[in-house]
Length: 313
Image 1 (tube, rainbow, N blue to C red):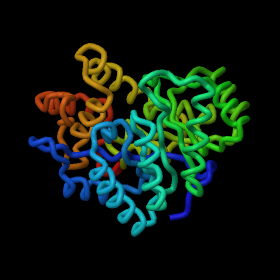
Image 2 (tube, rainbow, N blue to C red):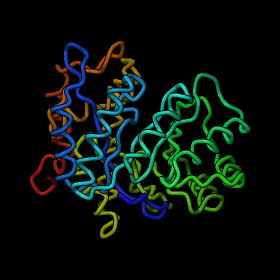
Image 3 (spheres, rainbow, N blue to C red):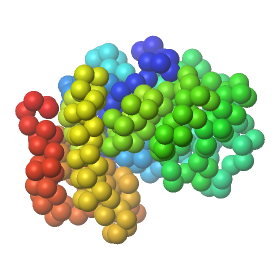
């Protein structure tokens, strides 16, 4: 598949959630079915090995097997796909990137080195090599709010001024001033923001989301994104209900019970019921217990009926 340019990286992208069995092994047959389902829901694209894909807890053989499967299925369906090559070890991240490039993804995602916070000179040195080795595939920087080094709009501009041609970034968003600075300083960078903020983000210049809302239901998340082009008022109203559900019924599992973001993502997928996956994470991390699925699904169904109705499939 041809690499995407920054202005082509848009919309609602669904993540691969890795099915982990009781023996802590990846169930690749379930993963195969999950890819087929994502393709059938006509999301704007699919990406592997984000946080929800547990990239930090895979062997290199598993990484290769998973991404070869994704590449073959997406190539056959003409579905844009990105491969996450992130790893806490920057040399392993580089090795993953070199192998992923040969699968001809639409783009490659990486995180910054994360054992200790890199200086801007180190950030630029890291990205220089990663962009060079990814070419001709474009590089997307995943810079989440829990990263040791969270970049400001001015630092993204500094990266650009150093001649490093990122095609996109995945970041936590900010206020109107933050959006204005990002669009003024790095106007050509595809800007992806948290999924549950996407409608507001689009009104301020965001290009899309590697979406936690798509964890709940990729098809419904796609319909919501498509709605933004024709009825932004309705999309913003739905965003309010999505955020209410997240704030009241998902974030407490993270804030109060100590579960990880990836645990919350798998929990939402189990609530949405769109794929054959449960809430288990690979050792030593813990998933939200299955006993919470049905009660939270009932709440979600009442608050977001569109995510459970046939017209959102």
